[in-house]
Amino acid sequence: MRRRPVALVLGVGLLLAAAVALCQNAGSRGSHRAPHASPTEALAAAARSLPRPERPAFTVGRPVRLHRGDAVARFASVTRAAVGHSAPSRSADVVAELTRSTQEGTTNVVLVLGQTRRAHKDWVHIRLPVLPNDRTAWVPRRVLGGYEFVHTRLIVDQKRFTATLLSGGRAVFKARVGVGRPESPTPSGEFYIRDKLSGFGNPFYGPVAYGTSARSAVLTDWPGGGFVGLHGTNEPALIPGRISHGCIRMRNEDIVRLSRLMPVGTPLTIR
View 1: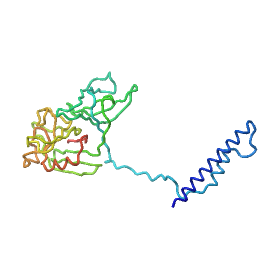
View 2: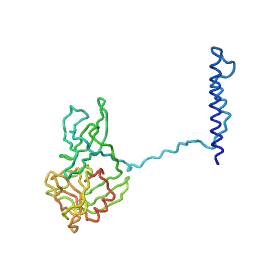
View 3: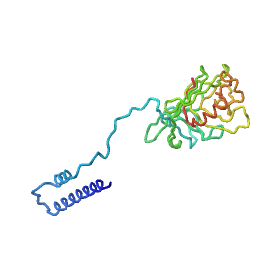
View 4: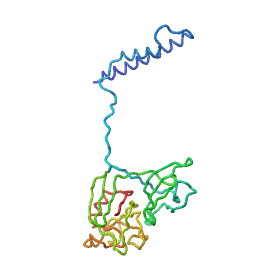
């Protein structure tokens, strides 16, 4: 079973030995020119005498076009307190401050939108968890930890009272939800999942709660004030509907199922 690879290795070894011998022979003659073939020609002739392989060592396959839904999102933890700028420059306007921890005491993470290099420094474009919603900023790359990647996206449709989780562009979860009342609406826009909590003493939040980067201009149920949460409930009969102060509520069995599928850092679209 191994004769042909061994023969090929021996052939390559003989070829290299012949090349070395030719080079040494040419060097030993000093300034005299060889009357016969040059080392390059001799090497090519020796190569032609080797047996042909059964198949190529590497074959380039046909290109495969990626599906448009196969997008990958990046996020990173904030490892140093910093400020976000309106452009990739320290002289640009300050947009917001970044802390290492969230209001819940978890590691603060930001969604990465892009990266550039200016004046020999790397800058990262991030989505901010601040008001007004949908704000972005630029921060030095050094204030963030390593990039992590997710293939998921959560879409909350307030008109249909549904939450749909996509993974690789394919729906893998769907459930009915409750959203904010007209006087305390759930904000629409592009956000991301900041953290995940469990073990509440109050059954109001259910068994699992996610913190999002979405903010409300009015008081919400989420601790810290202003942040929109995605959590379970002790009143499942109210779902679906406009029932909250801005948070997104799910039946407990649904939020538990979602918690097995959706990692922190997942982009969130609320419409």
